[in-house]
Image (cartoon, rainbow, N blue to C red; front, side, top):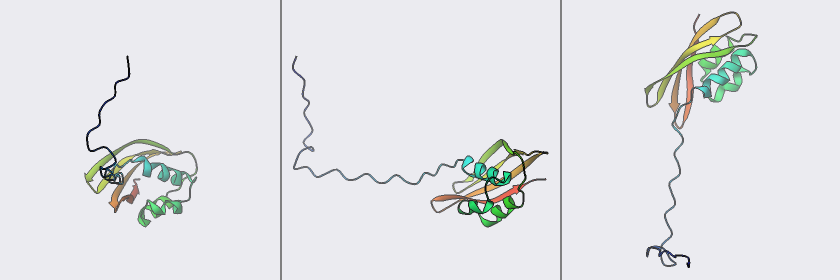
Length: 124
């Protein structure tokens, strides 16, 4: 049996205008809490200088992390992300430090096309 050829619509061909280019995909607006929690955890352990977080953390959050550095292994416990609005979210959870478990709270806000941690607090 010979191969079947399908006919193309009249818009295809040499006289048809080229298709319009697709609009670029917008910057992803999804928020992943681990994008902030993993670097913060590394700064708290002393494996990363807190000054490296300046692009994604506001100065008050960087200074809060720099002041709470502990030696030893710190693990991330459970955490929750709550979207407050389309441009803000709050994080809360626990950190298992070498001598005790501490709670943390953080606020993340969208500034332009990026998310930035504006507040970070370790609770006593």
